[in-house]
Amino acid sequence: MRVDSTNITAHKMAELGADEGTVVIANSQSKGKGRMGRSWQSPPGNLYNSIILKPQISPSLSPQITLIAAVATAEAIGKTTGIKVKVKWPNDVLIHDKKVAGILTEMECQGNTVKFIILGIGVNINAPLNLFPRELQGSITSLREETGDYVSLTDFSRCLYQEIEGYYDLWMTVGFSRIRNEYNKLFLLPEESVQISSGVKTMSGKIQGIDDKGALLLCLSDGNIERIIAGDVTTRPKAEDLRKCS
Ligand code: BTN
Image (cartoon, rainbow, N blue to C red; front, side, top):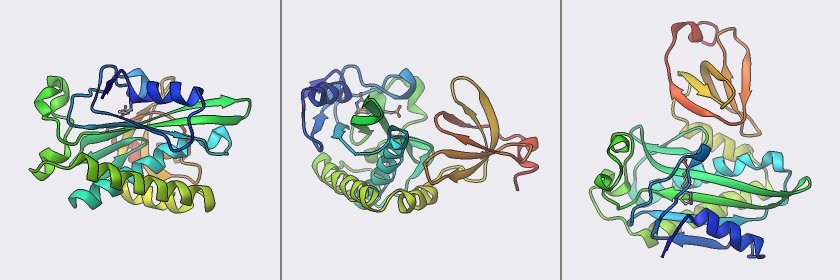
């Protein structure tokens, strides 16, 4: 099935009353959506899916679902291929520094309660990298590229849904702390000097991990710790950023 975006389809279905746990899966997307208004290239051969969730949580906790999905995706890749992956806060899953999966979480609220969350996950599995725009080809990878073998979409999706269900249940029953530990173990660039742009401002510093709410902790050059809720991380080593953070 080809859709514009599985997130858009799932959103429409949720508005019409679809149950929690409903999944929309597509072979390709004509208008795949990425974070921050970017597009998500979606040729056939990869996994494009969106899950409808209805957690009874405060909307302020919803960014945690992106981190939960990143851990679940990392686990599913590890279990199906044996490859160890890293995560780049908040939503990039990488193999050897190249992006293999991305997560887009969109929330609909009613007052101060969550009506539903659309958890969209795209994983580059079998589509040849030459189907992607040239400017992306150096920064992305796929499971097929990394393993040298065709990877079953069915086996991978089954494993992914088991992981998501396991971590989602853990989150609902115990909270975020164990997932936070798992996420921090997978962190790309811990202790490294990075630049983070959050749309309004850009900051440099050293990553300290995520806190118990899922915010990124960045140690600034003056030694203060900044909590960042949303943003884009890039590596930008600067000696002065490291001075007070070691
Ligand atoms: C990102 O890294 O910018 C997030 C990418 C999210 C892509 C997935 S593919 C399935 C779902 N449908 C979409 O339109 N986007 C998400």
